[in-house]
Length: 227
Ligand code: AMP
Image (cartoon, rainbow, N blue to C red; front, side, top):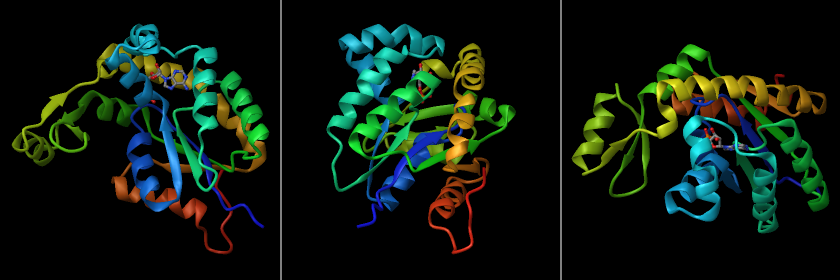
């Protein structure tokens, strides 16, 4: 029987909209997802052992060590439902993480069959991250841009609080973009020979970007993925 489960890793520089796109894809496909960044921020806020260990690194825009990240993913993969695919948002981010992931997925017999590469210019990433605020209030948290007056007013009207991530401050933004370029971009060359990389322009509306991603996986008969 053919295995139609989607096993996807979502790549892109900070600000490319990985988490936003994850939410769209979760509604569209039978998958579960893990955002390693979100998980680490939650651990940090909760003050857990892991959270305390990573808090300073997150604030500086540096990567958490491979050993910790690989152990975390291993645990998550152990509880993966058999009847669903998965989407990894923010993992792997280094070559050692990618190698370890391959080994773990091979053991599970569930290799990656898609790598989505969200492409965004540095100037747009800086604009997005610099203005990014999280609206915390009643209901689910919402990511908005400080220049989006309607979104800001909607947030305040529902009693929401606009919060800036500590790693969205200017010097940390630069650091994160540099780390992405040095550590994570080389991963595309690691995956390219497998012909599973779908590169997608991440500028435009959230819906437009989601549509581009979906087209890469639900192609018309003649479509071959763009590398
Ligand atoms: P993100 O929300 O994906 O931008 O991640 C926020 C922060 O979490 C990063 O700047 C890193 O400090 C940390 N982080 C997330 N995923 C990883 C990973 N796979 N390896 C190392 N650090 C990570």
